[in-house]
Length: 233
Image (cartoon, rainbow, N blue to C red; front, side):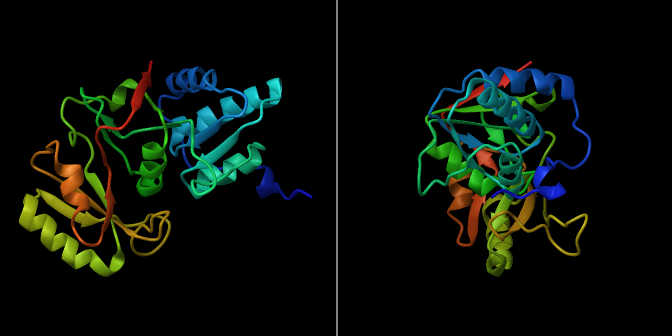
């Protein structure tokens, strides 16, 4: 049996999609990579939302058999609406995946995490042979941190320890817990943690590892040295 209520048939996305025409072109492009039998990592964000719809259409039109590993509850709900079967990293390894980014620098290093799913996104990207990063030209920067702070996912019990250590190690320009818009209190990540948005004076090649080494840090939104291919129009 399947659910027949309206929510079970409604795609989930909040707000307007900026640069939608560009993003739809990239979404269509990534849908051509699907092969029968694929296990695909499904990222979060507006471009990934459009790509999942384009992939679903190909799957239905051509009778392809695939499985998705979604990186967020939002992506999992949309997979269900689009009849894309889901699995988990404990059951399968993705052959490839797709995701978005908040910033991309000239070395194809990323800042991610505005959607609060950065830990799951990093797990899926690290598990995949290749991940296509779907962006429009507004996401390219010369220096990471130009437009966005670096999100750091923190176990709530360690929030004061992490703030102290980040201050001692990096002397950041600013640091703040990300507060929610439609609920009271902090944003809660997909993994049940807090997000701290940090503005660093400089982002160096060792910082992803150094931040992750602080007790209580789950992970950061810095994505360095992963098997990525940037797709943009």
